[in-house]
Length: 214
Image 1 (cartoon, rainbow, N blue to C red):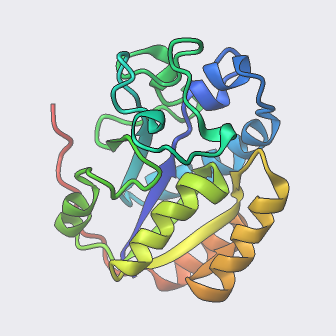
Image 2: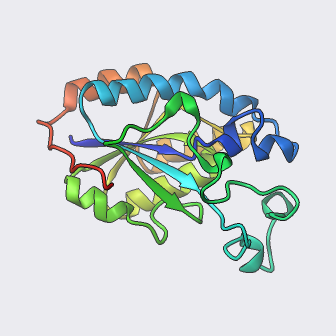
């Protein structure tokens, strides 16, 4: 097994008390609770020199890439009123990964404009370069961006593992539904403690990661 850790959208805009998501009225408590588990998983991968990729959900300040400009049928909870509350605008503090999880210079950050980190990004090219076969997922939101990326990974032929205590959602019911759906149809769902023990038993010899750009 040659795994890579995918940390989904742990950004100031979603996870920091002063971020735009909180200012929009969303309860980010569940996101905050997941941070220590993500930190533990991140430390495990770094300690074994295994590759780590972060994703960032971004928007342009003009709003040209907002969902509202594409869809006429869109749930109210997903409308992007970017002029009222700018959310994760590219190049701003809001869009950056939270300080508790700051990426290392050797780690890659995938900027995405849709739910799946595979949609119109470099992610799959980078994964092929590393010759990884297993993607381990943590981050937010469980039933939106985490699930969308995990499903795309599965359908591209990767084995997938979800760290159940290192993912979170503002919707506990849909969070639980995603965990059950992945467990039944796509891959493994394990706590961070179970997951790290599992990886220790199955790791293949490491493949050096290419140096980060810049």
